[in-house]
Length: 313
Image 1 (cartoon, rainbow, N blue to C red):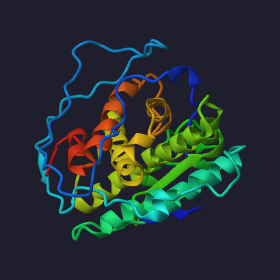
Image 2: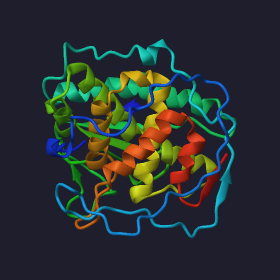
Image 3: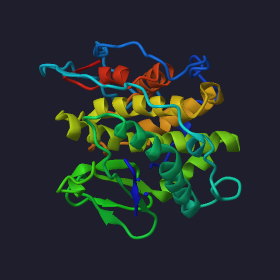
Image 4: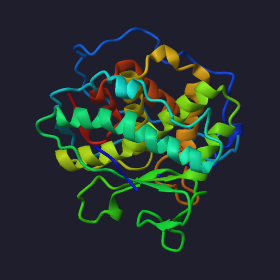
């Protein structure tokens, strides 16, 4: 899905990120692009007790059980091909780390053009029943733009908007999966986190991959005649796809637990259609599980467990 670039992330609330690292590593075992186990989706268990964010006390979203009859999806090639040097060798052409929101916008632009979109485009082109579609990428770094995916009266995307998201409604003819909005100033805050420069850049690319994954979701829904997931389900699928992409492009051992935790926390609070007032937050722990699933399995079929009403193989 080659991006037509004409870029949307949030105040990152560094207090939400535990930089000391938590949980297991992020998949340092060796892998290859050989056969992957075929998987039949099983939906994640629904927590039986209400959950709240440990820092803010706000309610956390849970995954509702699906009552939709399952649609079986069979993929010819369930894994992304190992990326070529053009993607694995991606380096920001600026000096050091981005120093302002214009630099950060350029960083995300180059990451998606060179390291993210081409990998997904090659995979889509390798499937006889899928089609590469033009995801429109819009960097919002000056004048605000309006989106039909935002509520009336508050439908402007500005450089300081909270979320990066894909809106299919802004391309009503559906010639593309939609427009990916990336507000530049909020994306730049990634580089305010207390991480090493190499970790900052890696977190920036992974978060961009998480935002881009919403376009992959819309493309698959269009081509396969599926209902695209929404809410927390869409965020879980996107996080899983970001893990699949990371596995294809970067060795897992390059991802430190601290960098992974930072990327997942940012995706929880900054990627996807902005929640409505009072809407439950997405637990970053669930996003981390979905991301790790994609990273360790490297299998798009496995990510189907988060897509309600479907069974993938």
